[in-house]
Image (cartoon, rainbow, N blue to C red; front, side):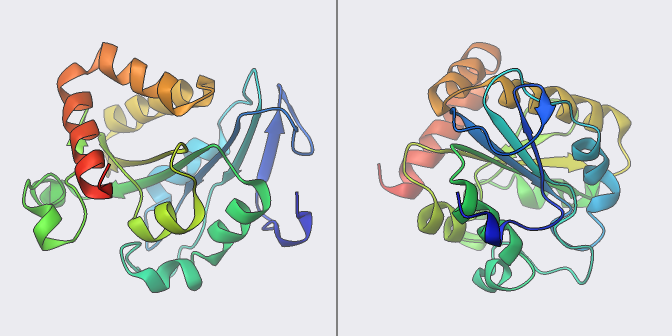
Length: 208
């Protein structure tokens, strides 16, 4: 582990207590407040998250609360999002989650089946209570993670308590997973239709 480049505001939990990184797998990294005012709906979730029962969990509750810069812009991860890259390169997480928020009037745009042609990435898939599931931007997924890593993006509906509550539950699920396959199995059992679409989108997008 290269602790020299770990962001100062990154909190690390291992096996039920806050401490140095546990050498045991898995290592999970959750980040929120990636741009603009998203932190208002997402950061409190990571600030109040409980430690995992196995492996390591690292969290960055607020990446940047300044000017909105899209994570689909490759410059994001070399500027305001560079602290995410620093954490990934230092910790080498097996599981990575970005927690975003969206205004209800943007739901159609995020879940548009043509999003792949309009924005260059697959559409988000709605799970429950306005929480959307998708993959992280190609730039960080392809450049900084191995193919067998689990990389997820959750979108929470702004000013929606039910959406936030459901997202907390989903992060608890991910926090307990020790591998990508375990999460995929959970998704297939609980949300078979969404899982089928998500897997097809992933394979088609990454040419698998």
